[in-house]
Amino acid sequence: MKKALITGITGQDGSYLAEFLLSKGYEVYGMRRRTSTPNFQNVELIKDQIQWISGDLTDLPSMIEAVREADPDEVYNLAAQSYVAASWPQPSLTTQVTALGVNNILEAVRIVKPNARFYQASSSEMFGKVLETPQRETTPFYPRSPYGVSKVYGHWITVNYRESFNMYACSGILFNHESPRRGHEFVTRKVTDAVARIKLGLQSELRMGNLDAKRDWGFAGDYVKAMWLMLQQDTPDDYVISTGEMHTVRELVDIAFSQVDLDYQDYVVLDPKFVRPAEVDLLLGDCTKAKQQLGWETEVSFEQLVKMMVEEDLRRVQAEIAYNNIYHGHTEKQLTKPVPL
Ligand SMILES: Nc1nc2c(ncn2[C@@H]2O[C@H](COP(=O)(O)OP(=O)(O)O[C@H]3O[C@H](CO)[C@@H](O)[C@H](O)[C@@H]3O)[C@@H](O)[C@H]2O)c(=O)[nH]1
Image (tube, rainbow, N blue to C red; front, side, top):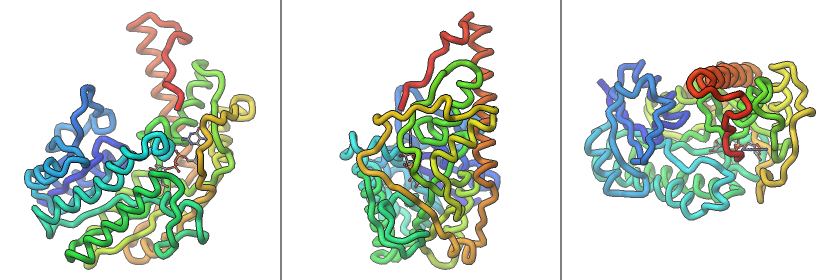
C-alpha cells in the first residue's frame, strides 16, 4: 500500500486529491494546522480514513516530524495563502507560507525521505502580465502580486531541489480550477453563491470588481488526477494543466445568472473595492505536453462547471433556509449573509 502526505488537505484540491488517492488504495496522511475552530467541511465524508498530522509549513521542525511520521512515498504540497487579493494586505505572511513554506517541506523531504516523490502546486498566476499567449511550460514568468511572486519562488526552489539533490520533484502549473468546494472569496464561488441567494430572496445585489479579466477555468476534480499522474512518470518534470479555453468574468456572471433565468445586469454592481492594485488581464493555458506525456484530459466543460456550482449552491442555500426556519424560527431576511470579500 502506497503512502501519501498531503498538505492543504482540508482545502478544495486537497479534499479531491485525498478522495482520489483513497480510491486508488493509498494510505493518506493529511497535515493540518491547529486552529481553534477546525474546518473539516470538505473532508467530512472521508475524515475517518485519513491519518491526521499536526504541522505548519512555516515551521520546519513540524514539517520534519510530519514526513518522519508519514514516511510517505509521495508528498503533495497544496497548502498556501492562496487568495491573490489577500496577498497585498498580507505580503509577509504570503511569502512565509506560499514561498518559504515550500522550501521547508522540500528540506524536510530531503532530510528524512529523499526518495519520496514531491508535487508542488505551482500556478498560472506566475505568468501574470503574460509575455505570450497561450502560456506553456516555457513561457517566461511575470508575476503581478505578492502571491504570484511567492509562487515563482516555490516553483524555482522545486526545480532547484530536483537539479541539486536529484529529487523526484515536479511542479504542476495549474490554471484556475473550481468546484462546489471552492472558497467563497474566489470569483466563481462568490458568483454562484450570490446567484443562489438572489434567486431565493436572501440577497439583492452582487458587488464585483473587474468583469473584463479573462481566465482559463477548469474543474478541480479533473486537475487532481494530473497531480497524481505527474508523480507516476519515469522522470520528474513540470506541466501546464488547463482547458485551453478562455472566458471573461462577465461571461461567467452571465452564464451563472442565466442558469436561474435572471439577467445579471439587474443585479451586478461594480465596486472599486474588488479591483486589484495590479491585474492579471488574461490567462490561457496550452497543456499539450500534459496531454501527450501524461495522457491527461479535462472532462468537465466551463458551462458544465458553472451549472454544477450553481445547482450545488441552490441546494445548500435551500437547506440552510429550511434548517433556520425549523430550528431557529428565523424568517428568510434574518439569515446571515457571508462577509463580503
Ligand atoms: N475574487 C474576486 N475576483 C474578482 C471579482 N471581480 C472580478 N474578479 C476577477 O476575477 C478574476 C479571478 O479571481 P479569483 O477567482 O480570485 O482567482 P485568481 O486571482 O485568478 O487566482 C486563482 O487562480 C490561480 C491560478 O491561476 C491560483 O493560483 C490562485 O490561488 C487562485 O485560485 C481576477 O481577475 C479578479 O480580478 C470579485 O469580486 N472577487
